[in-house]
View 1: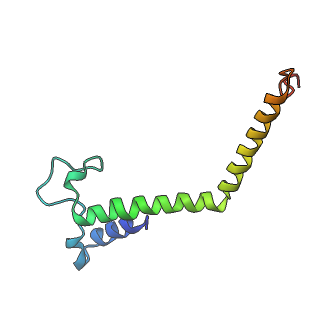
View 2: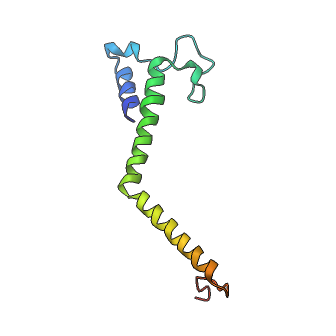
Length: 102
């Protein structure tokens, strides 16, 4: 999904017949050219920029987080924090749980 814009640029740069319909910006809209200005994006611009590229990056990030099993690691870290807080709240001497002298 993230490479669809590169494919569109390749088609436009090589002057293929279908390239005339793949313009990213509307014709005659020159004051809003650039990605921060979404007003001048054509339908193809919206599909390639917003739908394909951004959705592709979101899918890639979710896939990487899934691959490293981030959910299990975050849950385990919160359990350790809660366990440490529970021990600290029941510890009347209020000594630190981690020895800082090391």
